[in-house]
Length: 102
Length: 102
Length: 102
Length: 102
Image (cartoon, helix red, strand yellow):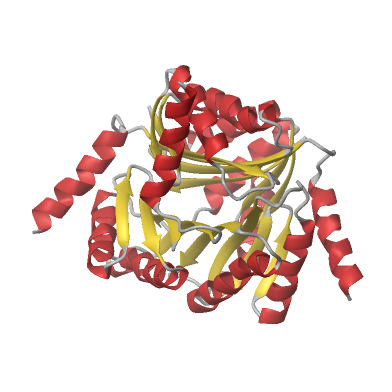
């Protein structure tokens, strides 16, 4: 399992508001079956590397179907193989450390 | 107000676990007074551009104080000036769109 | 054609030097046939979206074959469809503007 | 010395072409005195962390002075302290490795 962050930014839309595009991307993520959470700066995805790359290709396409002519997509992949990685587990490991230090 | 995502990655630590470093960075963010939320792929910050850059400089320094010799820091700044931006507001705008489409 | 930037960072290697890993990733890029240039902060790739994602999956795997247990990979995709995009063309458009302003 | 990559993306401009904005950012970088190189996916900067963050704040402001209402700025900082880092040195270390393997 890989944890990834994904941000799809339409370029040249004519208005600073992007929620129309982000909502459509979120809808496609929902349909994809890939585990994901929306954050204020993009989505956090969980899945196999193959699943992640496949869904990235699909979501990257969305703004083009909405009439946009240029899309900037950013993906960060965190892939750890000595132990099972999960979005929840990553947060808990940090929270546990913070708790211990108190 | 600017929304930013920040990820500080220590390089060359000798172990794949990074929670020790992330927790210390989170502690410094807590002390900074800058509004922030921890996500599985970094922290989301809210503040003026000046506050954000100042706290980034401070957090970037943390792993060095813990003995690390190389740090890779990623910052993304989302700055919108036609209306007041907030992390909460960004999420709500998308959720409202998703609700309307149903 | 899509222009992309790719950075593959091995985590937990025990030494701040990464050139061993970067060189191996560069070698795999060379063999891939995908057009690419090494910069001090990653590689710039040119190709179809499908080619790019395929080679990203391959390069991301490299540090694991070299014994690393965690890899952080960052990909940014710039995809413009109203005109043919090229890495050279992007640079030239900016240089032309700078020239005209003089 | 820190090596950084910087990408400033204006949002909502109404046209997919960004060269007008990139050229102006490049001009400000030129005037700043900070060592930098334009790549097809952003600029590579070299300087102290303080210099870098200062110039990032300045360049981030440029599209707003050109009438843009939203700017997305991405910064990646590579900071290594066991040896002097340079953009040239990073490339040469990789090229040397590739040469040795032949």
